[in-house]
Length: 119
Length: 113
Image (cartoon, chains in turn cyan, orange):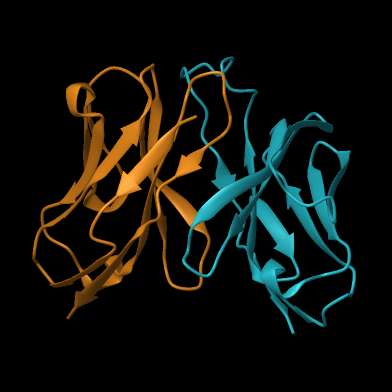
């Protein structure tokens, strides 16, 4: 029973194409995230949604568009793929908006990642 | 904004050796601290976390970490590693009320049988 799942696991595509990555969580969490892990394993947040509303939008090209049809899903659509988009993309979720969690903080649970390779 | 430094990006050690990974953060206020582990080809899993209380935190798989506020540090330790501890270890920090989780660059740990 996977808590945070992503599809596909691997995605190989040509430059200029448009692709989507899907994420679903069955933890009942309110907040979901997308992170990018580059070739040096550095993880950086891209987006965060709370109850289907965009909360964080880091300095990410507008070719990247997250979409949250409901609070259990957060998809990432990428237009006009570039070589530099090659990375592992991780979805994550957390229980509540930080600051309201009963343990004084919040823990993010990660999906298995999607390895995107742009040729 | 918070930032996290991890040193000794590549660590190679033998089974039964002790492991300590350093983590320093730069943020003057109250923080939440995390260590995540990423086994080869797998997703990030939470090892342990510190929010408040006892600064010595025990996590899964025999790992522990100590929060030293005066040193802005949250070092991870394990007294005796196993081959299965081969993985990438990430320290992360956020401020309460802010879900921007800032990660360090990770430590790649290889345990030789």
